[in-house]
Length: 566
Image 1 (cartoon, rainbow, N blue to C red):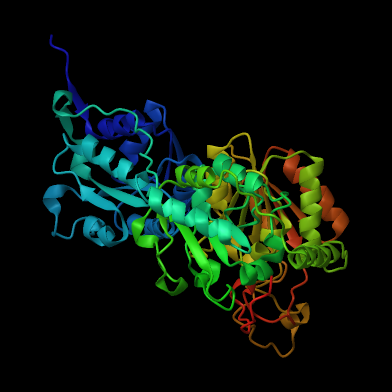
Image 2 (tube, rainbow, N blue to C red):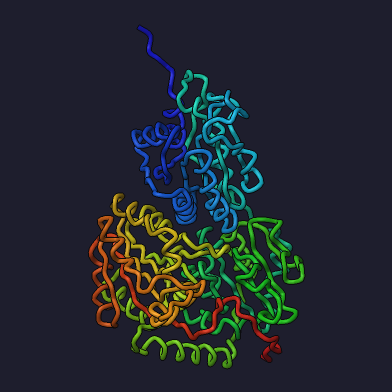
């Protein structure tokens, strides 16, 4: 009896992903992708089943950032894809590699109003690097390979593959399919040598050079080259929120605590893996010095010259690690002589202000004092943390409160300032880095977007410590008396429930829930959360801050200031 060489479509998809090196998939199953998920599990791929496609897609993007290879998300068609578009946007805006796979109606039912029918390829094409339905089941492996490769070759981003039900449930002779090999690392290119020389000369002539480290440098795993450049040349640096840790925050050359002062003062800036968008104030005055020259290093030609008055003269296109080594070679005998004393004084003054706030143990609790308690507990328990942070004040204040010493150990709302990424990111971090503990600093509003994914984390056995900074509102809450006013008055649009028991949600889904209203309670709860090996939510009751000005500090307007004199 001859051996059969036919293979089911679901098994072919699973084999293709496994052969490419995929070992974790995030998603939600339903008709017709259940068979695909089960085939992946049988093949040895871990399938982490979420409660919402949005969170699953966010998790896949974070997994891609942390591992350097595309995170894979599997969802149903129609509404499942609509929900997962959130991950497509997150991937594209942050340049995180993502492969989205989704079921669709049978190919012969197109345009008939089939079950959950949407022209998903056409819908996603404008927002992805590649979106396709394979022309046949036999060509599906090569189509998947192309989508997987394109997600992380060049500038990382999102790709999409449509999986019709008849492909999933059909069969094909294996001899008609193309065998796949593990996906190789993306090719690396160096920058134009003449432009590197020009950039190096610019740095040599600078009165105050500055290196700005973006999350692209962290994703590109360029930390060794960047640390050597900064340490050997004594150039001060400034990390973006997710660029923290590429060079340790504890470095004496870190001027994050004097961010405004050094941006207004530096005349030459080396920008590594960052974009001149709102996070970097477009590279323009009043935040940046008038006439500053920016050497922008990016993998994408089209990014060079964006904003900063469209000046592309000093841009360098290439792999960040290789370009930094080129610059180091050109600066072999260079060392920046000394950082202005005024900048050092500004940094020390800001440190002192922050320290005073952190030590202020008043009640109700403040963000700053809470973060000091959590940070002290992390040190005392020797926790290897990956920080996940989202919210307005919760995230903004946490950015400077927690030191990061290694790259890719801080995830936040990112370029789109996306709320709802937190628990999904924490799940991705736990799956990608099992020797680290996700430590989440969540605003109470932001936590509400994905709180049900606590069940995903507990079911999947992925421990994490989540601190919900509960001030009863968006940005800030309202005074407790407002909830019991008589006669009742409408609450403002920013108000949430008074002292909502987020900790009990964790208890309900098999995790651990704790509540803290005092420094002593928070210290005990933090120690427990960091050491119990469980999914733990600490509900931290804060001062609602009802009388504070409603604004996001990062976007606060400033009057134009004259450039500092060196």
